[in-house]
Structure formats: structure tokens, C-alpha cells
Image (tube, rainbow, N blue to C red; front, side):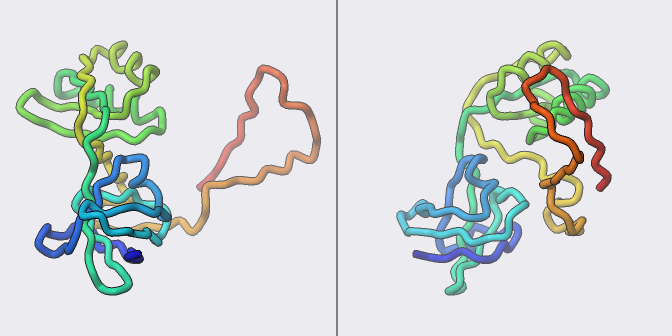
Length: 182
């Protein structure tokens, strides 16, 4: 098994000895057993966090480089007129804390996400037209994870323990608001 241990960022096809095509749900994992596109057994032993980007190189212990490719998978592309309507669509979908791909082509700007009836209903409510099709899903990396940009760590995890100094049953219909300063 080829052990992939280091993220290299974007690499040219010619720099890689093999490719690994994965759907988005597997590109979010740092630990994974997989098979390369040529049939070689691979093990990913990477830091958790950043999504594996299409075109990113992974270096093996042996020095070989494997290039990641985004798989073709079911997606929904929401289209709406440019400017404020597109900004509003991206804002409201992004406010749902889901991964989104943003792009532009000959038809104009778009927001893409995996099929999800709640997001689809929201997009239509905001005036978007939806296209259900198969394509790659390579979402925006986020401001702190831009390729080639500044890597920023907050030095904390996002699991939070809460001690409320009281016990009570949670079989009731109200939410408990908790403020988290980061």
C-alpha cells in the first residue's frame, strides 16, 4: 500500500505518477483506504481539516506523487441573475453552513451544492432556477484555506463541552442557545 502523508497543493499532471478520483464526501477525510485510478492500493494519512482539492498533489513516504481529481457526482446548480440576486443567493445558502461551489460560465454565475431538498427550496424561493445534473463538486475552500494563501490556525477544535451545573431532561421542544467566542 502506498502511504500518502503530505499535501503538496496544486501540482501539474506531469508531476504525478498516478491519480486518485474521489467524490466530495471522501475528499473531506484525512484518513482513508482507497484505490488509485490505475488500481494501486493507497492509504491517506493526512492532517484533518482542509478538503482535498481537485488538482492537489499528495506525496507518499516513498516520494511518489498522486494527483487528486474530483469525481463526477450528482449536483444541483442554482442560477440567478448577476449582482445582488446572486450575492443574496450565495449568502443565504452559505448561511446554512454547507459547502458551496461558486462559478461562472457562458450562462452566467452559479452556486452549486449536493442535492438537498431544503437548499433547493430556498434557492427557488430566492428566484433561482435549478439544474440537476452530474458534474464535479469542488466547493470554495474558505477565506482561511485559500490555495497558496495564508494558512491560519486558531489553535482550537470545534468540539465544545458545556457544564451547566444542572441536570434536566432534553425531551422538550425548545432550544438552548449557547454563545461561542472564537
